[in-house]
Image 1 (cartoon, rainbow, N blue to C red):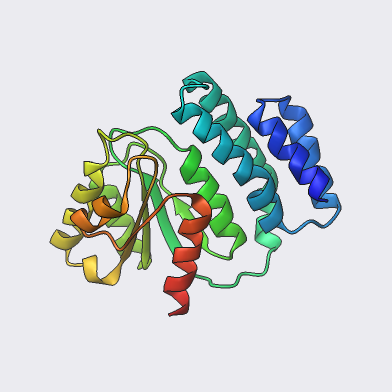
Image 2: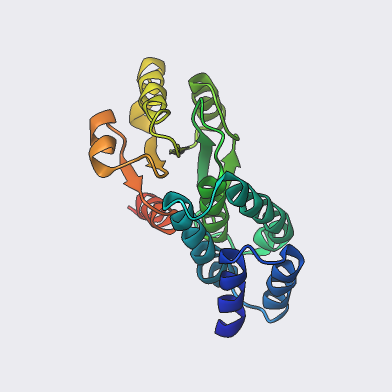
Length: 213
């Protein structure tokens, strides 16, 4: 099984044939490999390496978009299996990329890992107006909000969202998790977010701690 997941990771990093990667995912599912291992040890590790290559200038936007499209296809493949998983938390996470930012690779990885951990994830998409987050939180009474930003030029939109939560009188009812290449722990403290995650797996662990406390 580890060889299968390792091949999956390598193919993602090497921008390999998408059909071959999908076949490996299906083979892992046939072998009853836990979704957490497929997503964590295969997909996530591969995506993290692609992300590092992008940050280092080895890969460009076209490579990033290729991998993002592939991950979206795989997510569709896994949806049925995710529904069949025993839900551990039953908690809802509202998730989205802030206004001015259209990147969603990290957000989608987090979504898959969170679903595999038993969360219901409502993904609002990318380039979102702050009011959309507020409206969805009010509508669902969700207790966790995940905000993503890849660009340093858009991360201040996270503060805008938190300001809107305060104005709506619901900030104290919601835990705010921020993530993406643009965020730091210092920035999280500055905008009074509850936590910052530097990868999707860490973000899910933070959410699991919140619902178990």
